[in-house]
Length: 464
Image 1: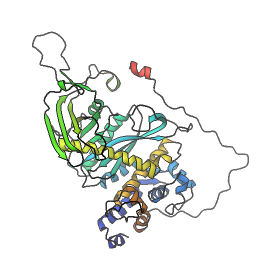
Image 2: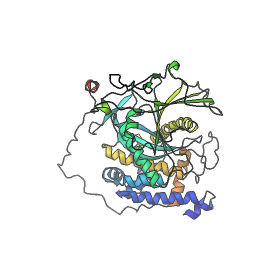
Image 3: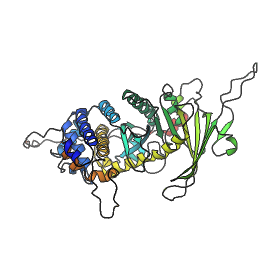
Image 4: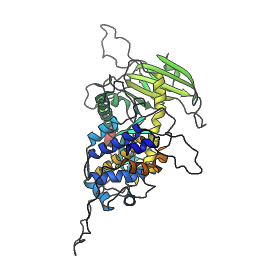
């Protein structure tokens, strides 16, 4: 199997990596593992399917359509082993830069589905119109600095609107520990959007900031504070927590930056990066800090990034403000601005997972079923990335030709059926069976329990 791949001139190493990943992935699927594995192969190599039963028509799925729902309902996945596997097969030549973001799995009419909340169709922390009942799943993906739409998802958890920041901290701690266990000695950088609170995130990571660093986008109207002046000995009164203001909208409060980087980039024109250290937000003893006798002082770097043009010719937006905490004492400004611009690559991954692989099209009732389905989607994306160096380009007439190894996820998918047949499947064939007797006469089904959408009382939240 592997030798035939090498004979095609695509590389023995890529073929071995794909075969090894498929074998080790099969070991992570405990109950109904064969059906789960074939379902993953079906969605990886299928065309655009409208719903789950259509995947049973794919050659890779050798079972009946009812087995798809049975596998997602009764199947079990060793999630910790799968996370270890995804870290082990991560792209070794990509930088240690990881994006964290959440996307909504909409279930607006599923009244029999429990634990639904109102989520924006974008990220978990977004506000505004377009909210829909459903579940939100938060992915952690490695990003590259190449000009393509590839990422390497390595973790996912289900989050609510209230605990997205806390769960992100847990993901960072667990994922960085896996990196170190895999032999990685560098300090990983984690990128988050403005829907996450930078102060609670930094506080939750306070015991790990020497081994990780986080970069969070903040609003352009934020106000931070410098350290207060030294207290005069013998002067009565309480010790001050905050000094001079730093308002992002008021350049008069900025002062001289501690670091500055100016360069010319082929894509973005003149790039300017400025950093101020030792700043902290004003916090209160509520929300994540409820029960504190006095709010903590959480310090970090505030970074301002501006560019003169965008690659697509659009007008460049206003300055990008970023909160940076952890890692080396002196931030690497060149790494920071390049890394955060690639944070948006994870949105391309979500778009392909939804529109290409049909992640949000599966009509599943329980969030645990959706979680298993999400793991299969992540495994499918990983398979496509590992098969990228082996795939042939079956382009349409209106598409431009791409060099080998430069194919998009959609184009690799067109050739994955051939590659999967060459790599073989560790899934066992189905056992021969015959149709059952059907439903006994007079038997009726029990109506499913209805669950209301979980909402948060804003008045109580404001009083807290």
